[in-house]
Amino acid sequence: MDDRSTVFLQTLGRRLFNTRVAAGYTVRAAAQAIGVDHSMIVRYENAQASAPLERLLALADLYGTTPAALLAYTDAAVPLIAAIDQADGTTLARLVEALGAM
Image (cartoon, rainbow, N blue to C red; front, side, top):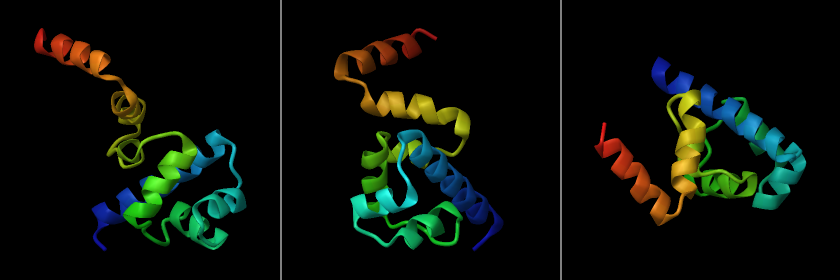
């Protein structure tokens, strides 16, 4: 794994940890909810293993966020990405209109 991939995996692991804690789940409760052994959650959060897409989707749903927010390249983008992913059509249309006026 190259340095960029390692850093991204570490960022994802930290984000998974922070999001889990913010959502109020223990490692064991999160693991049980998505049907994996608790050691896998620990391995994802410690960047010792890469979570498959279906598990990232399940964790995002469980934690009340979006897969895109979990995979954001920068931490600063996470709230914006989550808001955009969860916005309705009217809100998105307004955002597109506002960005077009820039």
